[in-house]
Image 1: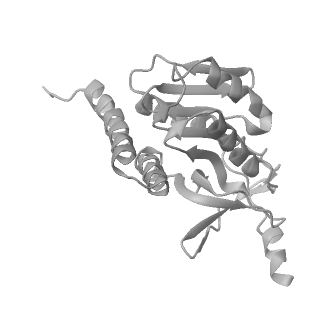
Image 2: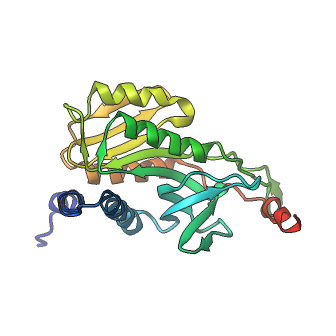
Length: 240
């Protein structure tokens, strides 16, 4: 009989993430180094555990009009159906049609950082996305509706007391539909979620990083596949 314990495996995943974030905060003196280390912890989690149809990277997003997003710490995007992703001087640039989710990663959460994350998410959601009809053996399907782009915030700890309480809910509500942060993890305290009906804090999750990962996968499963990109809308820039 196996001695494996799924409870211990799932708890161990959270403990590893929380521990690595704590080490980055305690041992790295430079704020930029701390931030980069935190981003890498979350990116590695996503790269390891998200289904392979998704890819995660620190990236910019571009649309066919030539507009760019701000740099996103952890961008979740399609790699199966999106035909091009730029790599330039160490930077990753993803077409807007391929984006599933955008996250800001910080060491701590406070009101200013929530607003900053909301601003980052808005910079992605405001971009133009194309969607072409989909050919099939019997004709064509109509263009796929544009899937909702999830937004979120990833941190180690909170500057509030309690860590996830009314102060967090108040600032989350400021974002409006375009700036809504749908999901977030504060590894030392818990996770939070928002939907079109409002925001709620979840304070009782025993292993927040693992719970967050499962909830993110569930959200991605609920999302439609990315649309068929109009590649000619991008190629017109070659003639200018």
